[in-house]
Amino acid sequence: MPHISIRDLNVSYDGHSALRGVSVDIPDRQITAIIGPSGCGKTTLLRCCNRLIDLTEGAKVDGSVLIDGVNIFDPSVDIIALRKKTGYLAQRPYPLPMSIYDNVAYGPRIHGLKDRRQLDQIVEHCLRATSLWSEVKDRLRSPAAKLSVGQQQRLCLARALAVEPEVLLGDEPTSALDPISAQQVEKRLVELKAEYTIVLVTHILRQAKRLADYVVFLYLGELVEHGPAGDVFQNPRDARTKAYLGGEVS
Image (cartoon, rainbow, N blue to C red; front, side, top):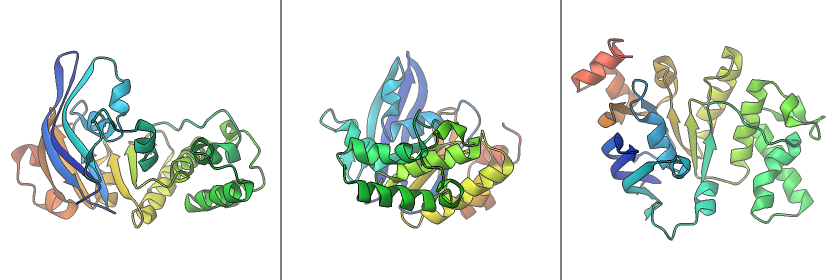
C-alpha cells in the first residue's frame, strides 16, 4: 500500500465546494505534481494530507486520506505525530525567530531529544542534505532571518527533514525564490525522492515537466486525470487536460 491513498475526498468552505470525490494513490518515493488552473483545489488537496486544512475556518472535510493505511481524519489520530510524518514547505519560507541551528534542532527537541551530540549530528546532516552546510557552518548561532530568501527556504526544508518524515509536501515551494535559488531547491527535491514520497503543488508547467514522476490534474475541484508524468504530458486522455497543457486554460 502506498504511503498516501485518498478516497472520495470532498472539501467545502462555508458550503462552497472546493474538492469533489477525489480518489487517487500517491506513488511512494516519487515526485507527484498536483497541477491545474488557479482555484482548482490544488492547495486544498495538499493541506488535507497533513490536516493543515483544520486551520481553515469554515472548512468541512468528508472522505478519507489514508497514510500508511490509517485515515488521518479519524478523531483518534495524533496530529503531532501526523505532522512529524509529513514535512511541509510553504510558498514562502517561514524560519522560526531563532538561530539557524535552533531552527533545525527545534523539531527533534519538541519530540524529546536533548542529547547535544545527537542534535549536532542531526543539524549537520540536514543542512548537508539541503546544501546549506558549507554556507552556514561558521554562523550556526546567527539569526535565521539574516539568510537570503533562497537560503531560508532550504533551511525550512532542513527543518522539515530533521524530524525524519516519510512524506514531504510542498505548496509551490519555489514561487517566492529567484531562479538560482529555485534551481537549488528543485535539485535537492530530486535527490531526496530516493528516500521520501514528495507531493508538490505547482502552477508552473515547466517545473512539473522537469520534476514530476507522477501527475495529478485538478479542474474546478475535480480530479480529471492522473498517471505517470510522461503519459499525462505526452498523451493526455481528457480534453480538459489537453486544453490546460496547451495553454488554453490558465
